[in-house]
Image (cartoon, rainbow, N blue to C red; front, side, top):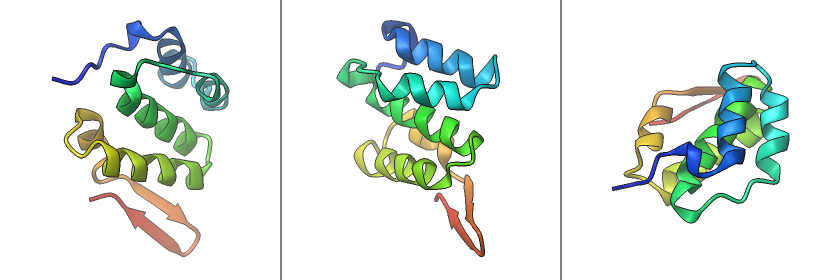
Length: 97
């Protein structure tokens, strides 16, 4: 079973608060840039980074992190959360299946 407890990494906990409580996705991206969580929390790191990038209108970073999450961790519960996300690139739209 995959580890999904963000409390095991203070940086991930802080980034989650910045995204969902304080509505500060830019701050969350700065925190995540220096985050070094345990390997079991990498799917959560990719999910938070994708979510924060999407909220900060950095669509390229969001798409890249969703792509990595989907390729590296296809059975992760975090991958299931990004299914159906629409990431728009001007006239292009990237849909996560």
